[in-house]
Each structure stands twice: as structure tokens, then as C-alpha cells.
Picture (cartoon, one colour):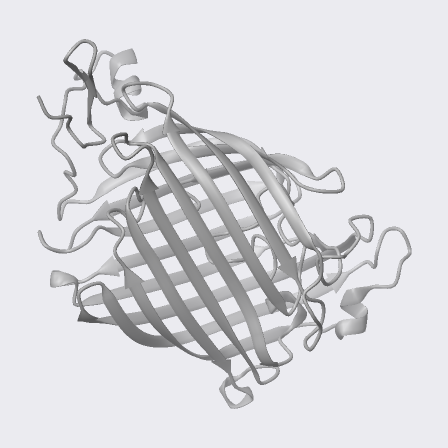
Length: 387
């Protein structure tokens, strides 16, 4: 009997039995004596939306205690299209942070276009620690601001898994204030040039190659993206500046006969000319996925250039797929202000638990504990894999 290669039917060689896959929806249904879960076909996402959501109380380094509503919806625009997703994570934290992000990736019929959106509104008190990866954690400078983002890119299919496109991007920071470093050290933010508000507005061009089998939980394939951004004063920007983002990801089954996955990620966010506003500089946890730098608080490292790498091993802990685990390691290097060189490499590492929220869309609840240097450590919670 061949071994089924599916998230929803788990074959056990010793007993020749098939274990029905379970998720939190099944657990809820069984507790309340609703329909018992059964074996379902592989990949049942259709044009009818599949919803995954969970209200939660959690704790992370950047928010401390937070109340949130996190979820996504997955669907296809036709039977041949890739899985489209819309994700949000609305939260209010102990640090009086309000976050309302919406991220979307919509594949049109026959995968002719990939429409990628990122929209956010934050009321966001958050500290900065200075510029470069040599910055000192005790130079904490408490800040407060309002942040609004509108990013929309349309990518046209050229051939196979190759897409080329362009879009419009704007980032607004308003009501910016800071107290200065708590330890009395000079403020990198003040030296860089403080502003009451900043705007980065411009066009973007992107080349994308995406052969992943599933964007929510990839288990095989490659993701390669090169994105160029050009911000113009005549389009409303505070300054003219340019940047490029290189995003490379690769996924393998390991061992090949299992459903376990080893994933690699390289993310390089580089300022190539001009002077971005301080809060638009590359920073840990400020990538579109809020994923870089597990082990460090969001914004711990910031600078004109960021070079980042990560590896993660994902594996099942229960035969029915309800529980899984990961181990991960990452490393980052930042420069300070534009025109400076990359500084020291800052490592992070840790492990985490995965709980299957929805077995159809392969959506997991991620609960990770990460460690960094200078005593940095903390809990990181997410819905869906970080990359």
C-alpha cells in the first residue's frame, strides 16, 4: 500500500491504519457532541471561502499582554487558481498599542494575476534602540506614533511560475514623539533627524518566482522575489529615496518520505540611495510578515541595510496532525545610517509549538519562544507560518 502524501490522512506503517487528521474545529465539535471528524480529501479549498479565526489573550515582547482576534480566509477564484488568502490580526495591548493589519494575496482566474496587498493602521507606542546591529539594548528610547500603510502590487503571469508587476506604496507616520534614551545616552533618533510626521510615497516594481505548493503552509517549492521601491517628493514623500528587497525561500521534505519540512529564508532589505525617514528604515520585525528577528523585540535593530537569514525545521508531534513543533535559528546584520557598513551579526534561536487551527487551509497557531543576545528572550505568537 503506497503511503498517502497528504496533510489529512496519516498512514501508520506498523498498523496499516489511517489516522483521521484533527484540528481545533474538530476538538470543539467533539467536546460539544457535533459531527465527528473524518478523513477528508487532500486540498479541499474551493471557491467557497474557508475561514480560520481565534480570539486570544497572549503575551509578546513588543506588546506584553495583548487581546487579539486573529484569522484568515482561504479560497480559489476558480478550480485552476492557486489558493488566495486574506489575513488579519486585530489587537490591543498592555502597552496601549492598537493594531489593525490586513494582508491579502489574491490569485485571479487561471493565475493570470497575483494581487498583493498590505494595509495597516497602528496606534503604536514602541521603543527604538538606536541604529546598527552594534546598538546597545540599554539605550532604549521610548517612542509613540500613529502609523498607516497602503501597499498594493499587481503581478502579471509571464510564463509558468514567473510573474512581473508594479504597484503603489505609501507609509505615513504621524504624531511622532520620543522621550530620549532612558539611560541618558545620546539619541540616534535625534541625531538622524527627528520629525513630527513623515511620508514615504512612491512606485514599486517586482519580479516574482513562486513554485510553493501552499502559501499558508509550504512543504515544497521555491519563492524568489526582487522588489524595487522609488519614493518621490512630487508624490508626497518627505524625501526622495530608493530601496530594494530580496526575498528568497526554499522548502524541502526532510526526510523525503515524511511530511516534516525544513525551510530556509534569506531576506535582504537595502537602502540604495537617499535618506529614508527613521521609522521607514529596515528593522527587525518590520518586514511585511513581521517575522524577522525571533528572539528580539520588534525594532530592536534598525539601519539603512539589513541582511537576514533563517532556517526552521517543522515536524509533527501527533499522528493526527493536531500538534506539531519547530526549531529555528536566525542571524541578522545591520548598518547604521545610510552610507555606513554592515556591523556585527546578531543571532537568534528557539523552538515552538504548532496547533492546527484549520486542517483544510493548513493554518497553524504558532507559539514560539526565542532567545537572542544581551539577555533578549520572549514569546512570539502568530497565525500561519512566519515564512
